[in-house]
Amino acid sequence: MRAVEPRNPSSRDLSLLHRLFPSAISWPVVLLFTAFLTLSLWITPVAAQKLDGPEDKSGADGNAAGKAFQDTDTSLPDQLEIRVWRIPWGGRPRDPFVDSRGSVWFCGQAGNYIGRLDPSTGDLKQFEVPENSHPHNLVVDPEGHIWYAGNRNAHIGRLDPSNGGIRRFSMPEGVDDPHTLVLNGEGNIWFTAQHSNRIGLLDTGSGRVRSVQPSVAGARPYGIKLDSDDHPWVALFGTNRLARVDPDTMQLTEFELPRPDGRPRRLEIDERGDIWYVDYVGGFLGRYQPESDRFAEWRLPGDSPRPYGTALDNRGHLWVVDTGVMPNRVLGFDLGRQEFFSSSPVPGGGNVRHMYFDPAESAFWFGVDAGYLARGRPKAGTGR
Image 1 (tube, rainbow, N blue to C red):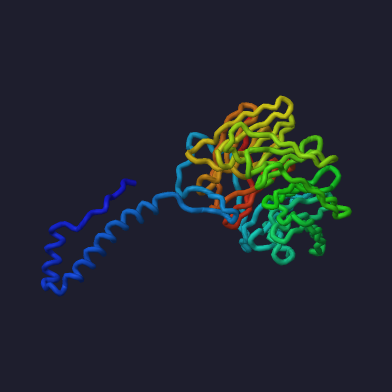
Image 2: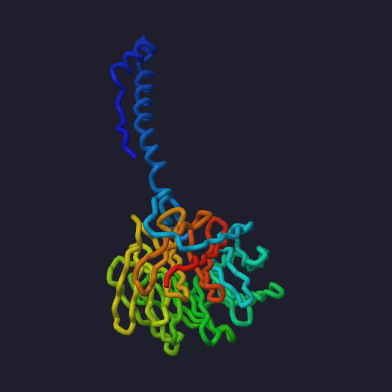
């Protein structure tokens, strides 16, 4: 938009003022009127520019979520079929997980509830959680129990879907905000605690919690995944590092990204053991190969991408949500060809923070802040 320079009152304006206020007594009024006219002409173009500029879409964690009406990369085809389900309770539905029966469980973080969706019928059910839990993430164990992160009141909870009963596992001192969970092969839960700066392991049988701190204060452990050896890898969002924990010794090893200003937020691990991460601040998709200790990075298309939620499917495609635009878009990246091949707008508005891939349906699920659950499924013939 062309900037409009503010103008000062002209002689024509002043002659008009003389006619309106002919007496000397009125000159203080003239001066006030002139000041008002100048100020109003100054403010008008500034306000008009603000309407065309970036819209503040900051989330609860204070991270900028994107620009309003920013053009996306139209050179990539849309290779996704996205279906949405509106959640009538709102409350920022997020972090879905599909159980063995095909039901989709999700957190109502702002609404302080756990929800269940039957995609085949659209039926919804809400489950209460303790006051001020504000569940951030959940997983479902093989027995069908729902484990959620009580992000605001320092516990991990186990929900029994048959009766709604909850068992609370309190966190030890210093671990205040369980964030993202992942079940290991023994049925125990690894988790991150972002603002507590901890990575923890909950023994689901005894309730014992062990934890380890990164070497840097404010490292903000965020996304977490397990490799084929059942070792957790973590994105340290407050630094330019990834971390791996030895389950036996709880010793933590950190790996620096190539760029000092990189900020990894979510990650995935492919069948070769390569670590794929998204740098939220820099706008990159990155790969770390532990065997060779080598990094490679690809910048997302667009002016100011902010990659956030990720899902790795079973066809060698990594799906990444760019929250640097509004509406968000889902980008597809082919791991073999090492290139982006798809771009799809997210319906409903709002940000996508976490995604879950369901191998049974070859589809991935995500929540949208504005009050939706969504399923993304590649169109026929997509990719290899």
